[in-house]
Length: 435
Image (tube, rainbow, N blue to C red):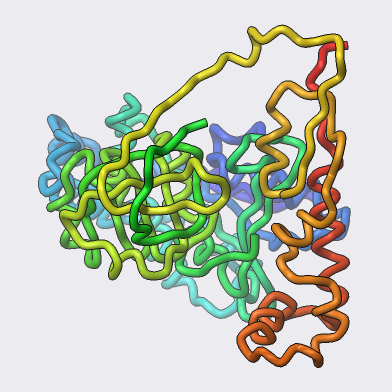
């Protein structure tokens, strides 16, 4: 049966990745997932996209373009105060543009199929808020930095049924290992509740540089990238302090938010109390090519504004923030120019966390996988301690084991799962020798 739609509405069932110009990347991806995964038993909530042409239709009918030009022409995105004022004015112009009657009718008709807990008035206001979001400080700055015309970029709005976040998990999926770039793996981080909390870093999800002599460790957490950077720390505890940030400083905060992008791109490194490898700070750090240490818990109290610090992500999966400026020696080797011997060279692996990174070294596969190292470095608890937990008398050790095995029917199930995962991560390393 044909799907009823208007000129400005496209249902997910009609969309795929070829429709990016019409509805944008996220809506096109939702359509692709709905069409391809529903038949395979993956429950993707239904919904529809309000097309990019609808955005242009709204501003054309409201004759809003001259006012937007007046608000944005000549903007210097490095002047954060002026950027904030102009962005606020642009959002007010777009939000104040009345939705034309034909567009409102099409949205209401489509929403009648999805109406659940929100009324139509809330929906139409949300559409205007989405249109106005094209002019946040971050969005404006991004377009200026990348040479996009504010007035040629359009916006599509997705409307869909929400997943009950209080009844299941949500999170983020990457189709590669985020740290090494290894492509033959799917990296998933998840947490109970909304997936946005994983991205924002408000929850911790489930989941060669050579330093000189190091000193006191001020904070430690998950390393993002493999670089080292030094600078004066700037601790941000409130968004109003962002205007004090100076280029080349180390940004230290509880978490980072998307609207901080203009400041973050001038930072030497990022350090946060909360977040995992798919949080906002981690994603931005990879894009900028700067080190980040996330999930430190106490960084904003152990580091003070003005402290000279060195942020190191060159020591494995654990990132550290050292007191003082530590000299760094960088050695770069072009592996493609190295002659390959006739002897097959294989690697020894004991820690699955470095397996993906190791796969990019010239090698002929895994020659030895040390089970005891997998237990020590990856599982982090002896199998006998899981089988006979009642014999452990140290309360702290018992509490640590309980944290590790939380969510498993039996402690032994945790060991089997983690061991299988560790072996699986190490086992698919392919030879990099040309045939």
